[in-house]
Amino acid sequence: MRLRKAVLCAASPFGNCRKCHGWGFEMTTARKGRMKRGKDCRRCRATGKRIRVGRWLYNRWARIYRVGAE
Image (tube, rainbow, N blue to C red):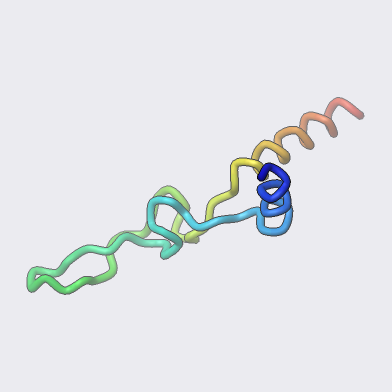
């Protein structure tokens, strides 16, 4: 299970934003009830993507390692 998650973070370091579900904006309803595009998502800055937790940890570890190796 852990190996699968590690491979997933290495192969695809970005996942869909949890707030906007990868759309980049939120959906609102018009006064008649139909769906329309709302404001841009602030969490992902309208990209629809987020960095995975495992990749974030790896990036942090690599940055600390590089600074310490200098």
